[in-house]
Image (cartoon, rainbow, N blue to C red; front, top):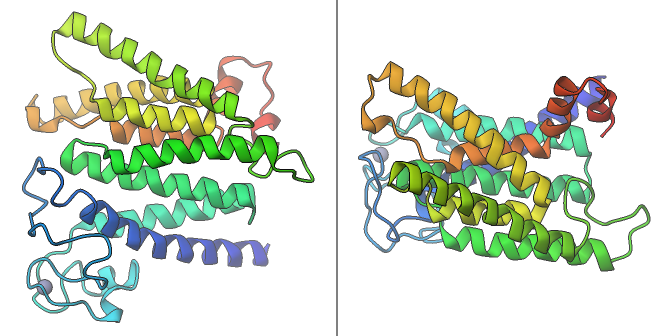
Length: 296
Ligand SMILES: [Zn+2]
């Protein structure tokens, strides 16, 4: 028991370090490419890229951060969410991303173990985290993320079909087992979402979805198969309706409360990686035993 909690802590710390990097990715990848939708994100010139400058810096005073300013979670708490040089506010979201990535990392490796499947699953969750925060800032899901990720999904299918592994496949469930399953998911996911897009457009006479959402569904379909794409649309829509309506009520219907669809899809897809569909199946249809979810 002690070893498990010790390992969990290690996974959490590892995840929070990765999360620290994801916060930087979500900040830098769209910069110079797109126009942000709110004031929270400042334009810092077109010279900024993921690797340049290599070290983190404060966007307010432009000073390079010392190493002890950049310890995940701890630095934010000790400096009380302020820059160590000039005292400018460091957004809460950096702490949030580090906490969430740490927690998800621990959960994934507890579920999948230190396996190839676990590593790939964590990689995809990281991708979803970056997509979520870029979509919140820019209402865009960048092609530089979705196109390569769709290709990776297809590659996973090829690897699982043609690379020998002693227990079935190299990258296990919930990933696709063959390139055919991957291609099928690729067609069925975006296809369904385009139908939803068309229906919404017909009824409301305006676009309810961005094409970025469709491309994210393509990633999920190619990587986890058709079932994941359907589950994500379904659960993402329900989440979006519930939270969207609550926000409308709380903020008295201001349009500023509009949240892009991408984050809901990301949350739903993460739930799918943890077999939320089996859990839901258990509660809808009692003949599905709960042990399915536990032993998976
Ligand atoms: Zn500063």
